[in-house]
Image 1 (cartoon, one colour):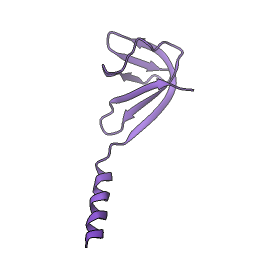
Image 2 (cartoon, rainbow, N blue to C red; image 1 turned 180 degrees about the vertical axis):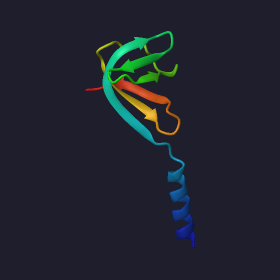
Image 3 (tube, helix red, strand yellow; image 1 turned 90 degrees about the horizontal axis):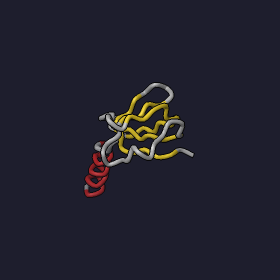
Image 4 (cartoon, helix red, strand yellow; image 1 turned 45 degrees about the vertical axis):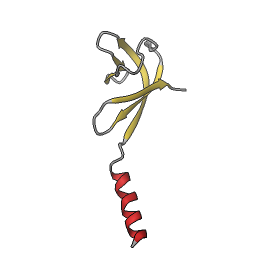
Length: 80
């Protein structure tokens, strides 16, 4: 019974986990006023205040991590 309970609790813990998508692309433009970047594919991402946008510039290759459930950007870093 204890093994069943432990397995069930562990399974439910994974259900609540957030899923994230990594999008790689080249920055087309940066708008510091709206804290947004536009990638070459035309998609616009709003960058949270916890991430510095002044380090981003047009032409930079980046990897943007987006929370699949909320669509919020959770991280952005230079891609290799």
